[in-house]
Amino acid sequence: MSIKFTESPPKDCSKKGHNNLFHNLKSNRKLLISLSGLIFSLLFISVLLWLFLHPNNPKFYLKDLSSINSTISTTFISKNPNSHAHLYYDKLHTYLAYAGVQITPDLELPPFNQGELDSDIISANLVGPTSKQPASGTSMKLTSLNLKIEGNLRWKVGPFVSGWYKLEVNCMTMQINRPGMPVPASSVQEAECSTNV
Image 1 (cartoon, rainbow, N blue to C red):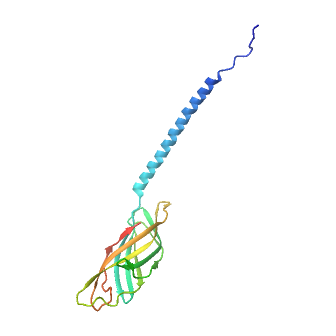
Image 2 (cartoon, rainbow, N blue to C red; image 1 turned 90 degrees about the vertical axis):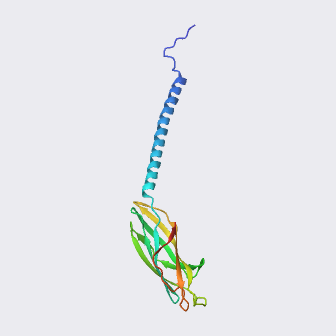
């Protein structure tokens, strides 16, 4: 007895599945290579932008520091050295320190921003205790004072604005104290300050 097949025998499914699997691996490999190339390109462009557009820290200069009774007048210059970035300052306060100890209360400064390569002159009157007289004697004595500025800073490069960074500025000055005169007595001329962000 023989069986007659009127239809063609079924196709071998294992070969068909093998071909689909091979085809899927090939297309997945192409997709993986394309995504890797895209990610590498974006990283490369990001590194180039960072190298060319990376903003520099602002520069501060102490222009003048003088004392009348218990009021200490300070004038300092803030400079944006970037030709492609704006700077935004917020929550700034300044105070005077002697031998690492704060000798005036914090004075809040108004928020401000600087355009590319801009400079701003900022004046502040700090009120605080100063020594009534220097030590007795006829010789002059040097006093080291630090004007400190602290606050927040962010950069704007093109349409991108960074997050807030902590800004710390330290302006060190040496002052001459003369017998019979309030401390500090002399004013200082322009000196560069250290800036940490």
